[in-house]
Length: 365
Ligand SMILES: C[S@@+](CC[C@H](N)C(=O)[O-])C[C@H]1O[C@@H](n2cnc3c(N)ncnc32)[C@H](O)[C@@H]1O
Image 1: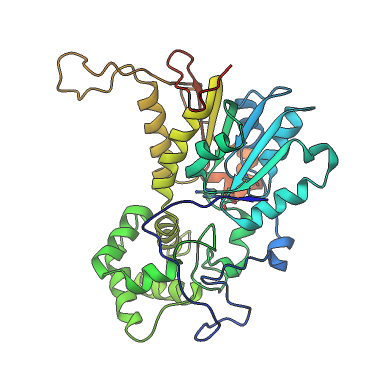
Image 2 (image 1 turned 90 degrees about the vertical axis):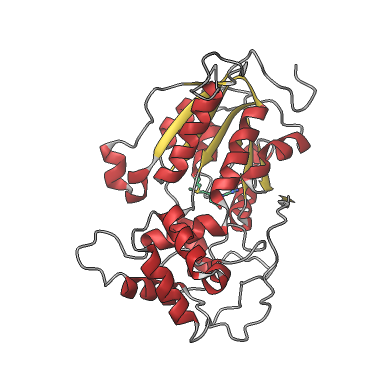
């Protein structure tokens, strides 16, 4: 496995190194550089969302080169390898070392060993990783955003409010700071802002006030503790379809992993590495990230990006993408019924235009 580190000067390593003060019986993973795949993670599974639609959108062909920026459980990668056989190659990234361990396990299949290149990396660095592996240009890039069922079903990862675990939420648990750091240190107004901006939670101020009150009694370290605080702050579960902590957990996960920032870098990197006619396919699971993908594709497809108040175009903007479908692709009723996780999924697809292809490798045929 190749490991690639993301340079982010804002991140400092959490220094919690022992189980002292840690409320969990398992070996503490907070801030530890040791990563293990827990038995619960191995037992769980992930059903790929919009798999056939996403693979068809990438127009796979024999000998093609594809980047799967979010390997997860490998459902999309496996389908892409099958559709680009016998010799298509997939460069598979994931920030999570446990996902990359699964990709390595897939390479035990001799037929796939030469066709799958797993790299532990943040997809923000997609263009750099592709270049380092002499994997430019590529015929397709897939991003299936968010978290996998493996992560959600593993309490130690701290993504789930239904399971008690350390309040971590990092896709790469060896880097950056866990969500508990934000919860226990952000000033009340900033915490409310995070919960409002990334969770669109109308009760953000009440939640932030309750968190700050509770943390005066002692640090909030577990998902169960936080879920209970949020539930109390919002007055319980009455009349709700979803758990009251759903939006708060989404907001903290987005902030902990700087999800909006890294998505912008990944989209830009994908366009840089795509060959003319190559396809970009992105599956988003909430309106914030879908809006960002939609706007990116609109901007990259526009012939003019001048402010509307200018009477004539002065930007000389060269479109690098064109939309493949006017409307976003959503799961069928059957898929949504069979897999509740798929219900909010939105797939957007764009194609790289040839005219202004800017070479990132300096070595295009
Ligand atoms: C929805 S899952 C992908 C599932 C996969 N398509 C499958 O079929 O099994 C999303 C994956 O993206 C990874 N991920 C999220 N943000 C990432 C980032 N910024 N860089 C790299 N991987 C990321 C997560 O660790 C997770 O494994």
